[in-house]
Image 1: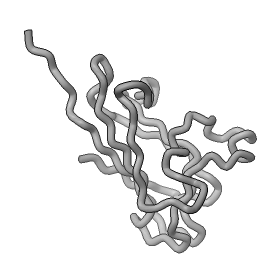
Image 2 (image 1 turned 60 degrees about the vertical axis):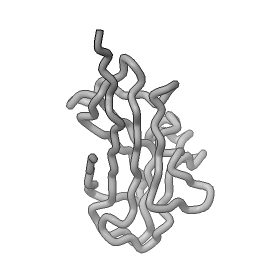
Image 3 (image 1 turned 90 degrees about the vertical axis):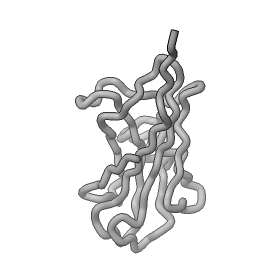
Length: 130
């Protein structure tokens, strides 16, 4: 019997626009379907490892997948969001990247990504995969 092992997945999202006050992402969700219904949760052996272009003090990349709700007043008060370290960001300068090795039985591909941004946002993002 041959057992299939999923390869490591890598996805990166970056700002498409120039940003004068940095980029702030409240939450990033990653899905195995096109309709954003089947979220790939960061748990157990199949946890996400987040990296970024750089973090502003107190706002690390890990806050972008902390599960704290996306647009609630509670989240806005807790500031559980990632802040880029660039304040005058050129297009593509601020980014979040997720590495993921699926555990047995978890989805082997990502089909869509959802982002919830702070009012200091990019009107468009670039999603790349490796």
